[in-house]
Length: 125
Image 1 (spheres, rainbow, N blue to C red):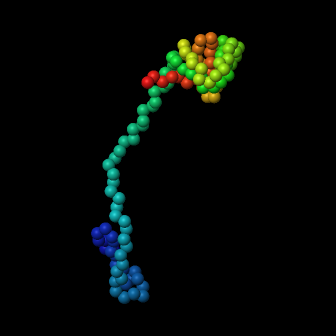
Image 2: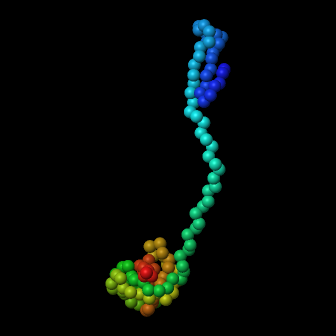
Image 3: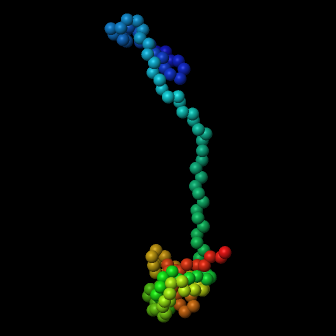
């Protein structure tokens, strides 16, 4: 067998190709070899910073009829109800307690505690 250039050129002799006289030329083409790329390193993205806890400051309610409780969690009695969505709050502190809609943070506000699941903090411009 004879190899030439990017494609192969091979010939068969009489013993390999019965019934044929002489050499029978044929060409087999293959795609050009793929260039090897330079080695690379995978660098993982940095982990996001954990949310600041406890968070304090000005906030607003996102739901109407939000229950204010005497302590952080559902086991504490309701002491007030904030009637309107968008009611302004001043969050003094936060605590982990019962999970509401995937959020276990409770906000201490004037008059008691509310679930952080229904609170959005005002952004500083």
